[in-house]
Length: 111
Length: 115
Image (cartoon, rainbow over all chains, first blue to last red; front, side, top):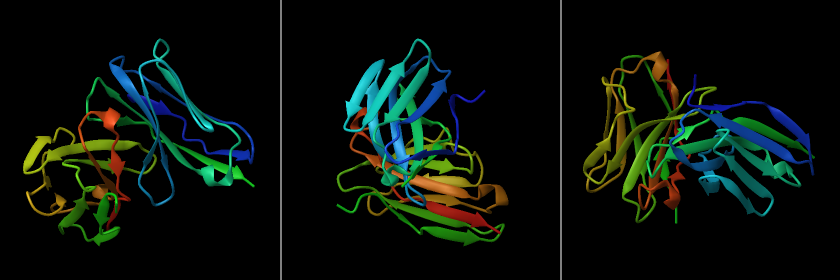
């Protein structure tokens, strides 16, 4: 079993739709949870960062962490074609520098 | 601020050759991390370096792979006697502090193809 599971998709939605992404994990020591966006042929860029359980909102993006279920989510509201990318979840234990990544979900937003 | 610079962007090597990947961290960042991304898989941690020191190389294969971050110049990931299975995208990230809450900045990667 992988430490972090993420459905690779692909996911295709019309412009303006809500995109829902999620990851599950097995390591209960994970406390830091991140979402990265990766455009084709580019490096990952940090989108959202959450510590422990709860919700965090930043513009059109909302990240949710449910540690009891070992489940994290990212929602993108009013999706735009420019949101088309691969979204990677990542997490770490305590202040451990080693990030464990999901395989990524490829999202296409159709104009 | 040029961000994290990796070169070359693409590298083709024949089996048995050496591959040398370079990473210049963001200005002011002294912590460098290398990750490998295989097709359909997430990024896997390889090594964490500070200037002139290897802090953690637990994700590096024991043979053929080495990394350095000299006092002057970029960090280098070296793969000796490459094999087809080494074909992957190699990403470097840098940070001000190893605590992930400070945020890591990734480069655009080097795509290694072994033929």
